[in-house]
Image (spheres, rainbow, N blue to C red):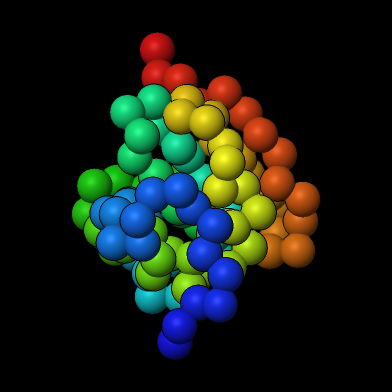
Length: 98
């Protein structure tokens, strides 16, 4: 599948982190974190993830899994966004690590 609209400033082949639930399309992306170092994370929002759930895919692949992440392509590093459901509104939060 080719994505019709890709808004992120980073190249489509930029590596990002997803949980296996998102990668396998078992659960939707409900939380996005743009780490202070510039990395992106797209996860389903379950609280019981550990390192065994993490997968690396391209930013373009993440946008193909859920094109609605294009709505928050401009969030700055150190900020995250979450939502209650796929159709929910993205709510921003401070994602700086202490």
